[in-house]
Length: 614
Ligand SMILES: Nc1nc2c(ncn2[C@@H]2O[C@H](COP(=O)(O)OP(=O)(O)OP(=O)(O)O)[C@@H](O)[C@H]2O)c(=O)[nH]1
Ligand SMILES: [Mg+2]
Image (cartoon, rainbow, N blue to C red; front, side, top):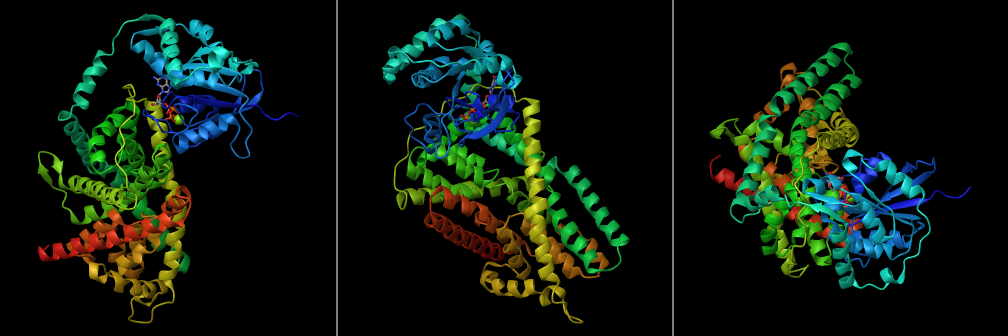
């Protein structure tokens, strides 16, 4: 039996390759309305209308085959069959953005010059039509010498026709007219072809142009961005509250049910103190995470995120970074790992290194539970001014502290270990789009699932291990269980180091398991206090927030927050930095500088707060 044929989706960034890939293979690759989303190849199975199964590969977007960044390198190598262990694709599907045809035809010509069996997907014809542009696919097919299929990936339009064209894509040889062209000639040819393919055009981008006038205005733009962020962080607290209460009640009821149903035993304690108190204390933050991501996804899909990147460019340039760093840094607000991987679209190696090293300072979603539990315990739920809540403001301030810290570190790095100047901003602005409800729902479901899976795996495991270490050896009469336990003894050692920055033993104890995942800081506090409560029913019933409030002072709480703004508390991030920088050198550098920064920030916060009499 012959091997499966391989089909590769290739084209400029933001052409809709991943959207097409998802529509054809049923995969759930990330799509977003800005260039540089996909940085790794991804394969899936697709059955052609002839019944032939093929292997379809989604590639990172590229502007040409002479790669300038690591993600473009993947594309160039896969197409050339030079990717280790992988055969070259048998058929290329060149994806073009119909509303941006001229630009996308430049790379298309280079791909056609390879002489491989090729099909063109003229994607986003809906957006072109919205802009008053009607294209003739037949004319384009004539010009390019390959089938051209109009598609709308997100509405699954043209997929069957595309499948048929792929099935019958035959051998072809690029004539000398195509192969001999240089970059400039290709641009001229692209212009001619794009013009020839236009059936009718009625310029109607007016609405979007005027939107950009406001959103990209040097004065109004940043104000709008700030206002948007403001609303986001207010919503994270205000809208989540009823849902959180619901989950809290559910977790409490489950706790009581297990407590009542099982006889007193180690198993019961493990379930109530470890699993339900610990993991439950983290799950409570699901609504906040979903609200945060609803905003992020809407901003990504609408095209506003790319405008935010443009606005931030001047600030980034002032610390020696390019606007290209914005998207990786932005992804780091979900998690530093995809963010660090997204730096592969950065051309300059020092620029890329700097971005990698500061990515963990962006507030990842794993910090949200830590921030939220402490804010809820110590910051009163009051309005500062007309509906603007203090809790949301403090949360925004913590996010800003991370960004400001990152900018400061970038400035230092660019003057020392990663010397270099800022490079210009070259990102193209995507078209504005209404976010599609279905894509939003899928995106939110994915985020929720990632969170719940972490709760069920890493957080669950670490919490159970911690509970065991907290429960043995058993305390003698009159002795507190935490003091007697292995975990308590280990934490006593660490407590000496963190005592100067205001942390007590329980806080020190939370820092160790939090290396696995930051949210574990919350579950481990919950478990520690549940074990410490012993049989005291009143203490057992107290919610984590109240426990923390009863045991910590305000300066301690603020110091703990400051610590989590900076601390490199996640092993997976460090592992990814090692992989992306090819060695331990920069990974250990990052670990050291972040711990140092966290220690200083927490210490300064603590002592200033104490001096201020808080
Ligand atoms: N209106 C419309 N939007 C589309 C179409 N195809 C894709 N999109 C949207 O265009 C944006 C970019 O799509 P992606 O699939 O992420 O583009 P990509 O080519 O994979 O981009 P990179 O991975 O950055 O190279 C997303 O917001 C999609 O929802 C289409 O046919 N019509
Ligand atoms: Mg993609």
